[in-house]
Length: 442
Image (cartoon, rainbow, N blue to C red; front, side, top):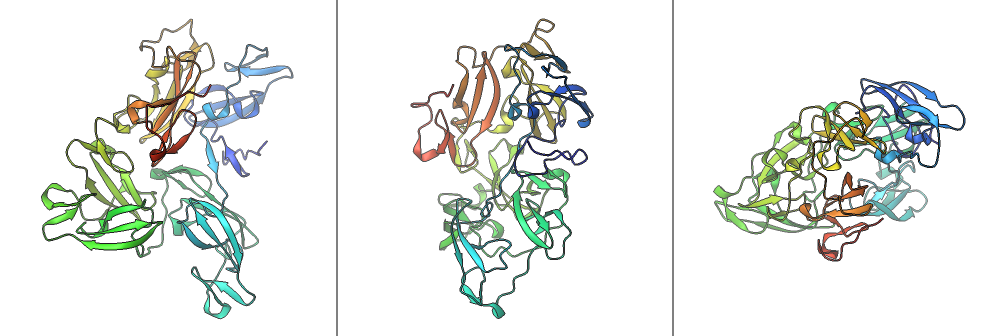
């Protein structure tokens, strides 16, 4: 079991951490599902104030220590706490191609593909890797990122604090990545809007950084020029004629295509270089982000941006229009209307944290109470006639999927860019047709 530093409210060791334990929870006592419900968490104002261990043969069920029997159920921590996965592969966040291996003083390098390390090589004696080839040591400047830092965790400001490093004795021991949309505050990963990162400025020397393969406009310079990206490299450059700009598929009328000048905007704060949905327009527009600067773009009429490309609005539902979206809700606690009041969520500046009441309990708007004490006012969900298990969300064109239990839709998950749910796992969109051959995993 991982150590838990009380003051930081964050896991001290690698792996998957289910912390902070009390974030988003109502004040009171909660089962510590990360310890098989053997402890009670005392939460106040979203902070952990005390931990109480239950006596032997008892477990924390329903906010109290009781005699445990086979009918009692301790929920999995991934349904009751914020899950933050610390990924330690050296290629996480890097584009495909060769890169220096951390903590090797540039003597070793590796080939990265899809965020994974595939080949690791060593330069000949007396040479170091400069990012492209092994050269004599005198021609390569290589300094450990931890050389002047004290032992502990430090944000990688060269990457906008999206990654952070573990330093010891002036050497880099391990590198981690925060989940998308969050930054490392110096203690833990938090929503980007809550973290200020003084990122060093750098030139956008490779316009394909962070972009999928295919044609892209030169977003930072008015969209009149465009290029083709393959494996994060430019392999073709072209220019539209006067009064036209690249609209994603052709050079179209400049008056019909939005491509605003880049400007510093909080919408891009903490985001890596790339394309993102514009929730303010319900995805009829999208944006290109680079170093906190935003370029607003638009889809053709009756189209929306699905995170990858513009598609017909009849085939995709923008997350801002979903029933339980936090984009249009006030900060605070909200009932998940699709779960039969079994689930609830906490909204904070558009960020959403989902929680589930124990079996035979419902969320009454303030606390989880016995289902004999409260009647859910919302209609049963799409799970009413389904077996327990995972199902694709057809309304999102299978980019999302949900979990059914006892007729309630408890949790909704997102496959991420360019992937859809085929019934048991997320696969590339081109490898599966949504709605055909889908099956649940019970």
